[in-house]
Length: 63
Image (cartoon, rainbow, N blue to C red; front, side, top):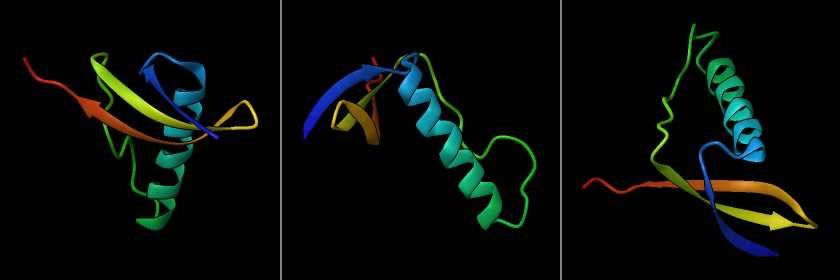
């Protein structure tokens, strides 16, 4: 198991964020639209198991 830093444009990050959106909409009874907003300047800390991203947290540094 590894922890890596990845950009918001990473394909596996996109898949994890999309899955989170579905879960949040389902938990909220079908909330329309996007539940969270991603920004290009976000970096994600990703847990990688068996070569696959399985969990993530984001960090946005404001300058």
